[in-house]
Length: 456
Image (cartoon, rainbow, N blue to C red; front, side, top):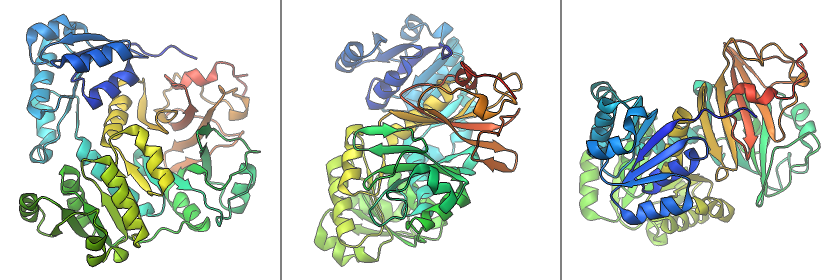
């Protein structure tokens, strides 16, 4: 394997997102964390290979102590938008090469491009807006559990829970393309605690979660053929009127969906009514089964639980499912709850923290990476590379590449063509190549040709 590109990274804010970023970045880079909270720093120092500095990220003195003059990247992810923006502005003036700010307030959402330009930010990440976007995308594949886009939306990765009545249950991987479509690839199987990068002889079993990748239209058709026929979503009920709900309601309304929001706080309901005139706002507890029934939960194509409490979201989603909601989604903050929620029957789980981390890692951690998405609590990752003309992997038949164990080339995107590759296919200059890897980080595309025989 090649050596990962080592960077000097400063993270301001040691909260949940800051800690998670440091956890992922410190294995591959030199990471310094700045925070005022001694307890948060102590946790980071004891758990991670990072340097911790107590103080304000706005302070010039503290930033200089952290080595900002030689920093490749400064990430500001404190709980305050304004502090994040000032940290980045100060850091850039002091010599940081690139800066990323977390900005969450909906009032700033319309001004992000202006903020980027005026503050010389390289990236602005809004976790709630990104989560709303991801939920809205999944609406096109209503019965798939999770949906992720690659190659600017032309390639989709969907997660499907295998049930006994599906025609693929009991089939070998090698037999699936002939029966259904040769233009999709099953890239990962999750079976209990096991994560499998499958080969031809692997058999799909009841209870497996499979990750299927391919062209959007082929994925859509595959879902229909295996009995997961996508249903057009028209009616959506949202529990919780926080920031994600505001962003999501606006997006779904533009998609011609009817949106109903249940919010327990009466004052918040008044505020939501003003912000979302096209949505119906109900004052009540979305986990109350009687309320859900009175609000016709059985007519809902989707129910999305997005309060600040994970347990409430999981429970409400299950109650909604039991009462006839066709698709259920729960927002989860604790990553160890993700698999629990899915095993209990929640169709889709959304984690703003994980979305934020994936987007920042895509930008920060790899050379020539266009997209990086980690799944199954980081046990596997899907990486999209853009191939450069000096790459050592060009014009070699894939069957002549000896790939590292548990690494597969899932898709090649070439101009208007999307290829689920076979042995005689080759990678060419300018291609987008999507890899799936288990328990390893692929620094750059050349890493996968370590033992290639190199024959065309």
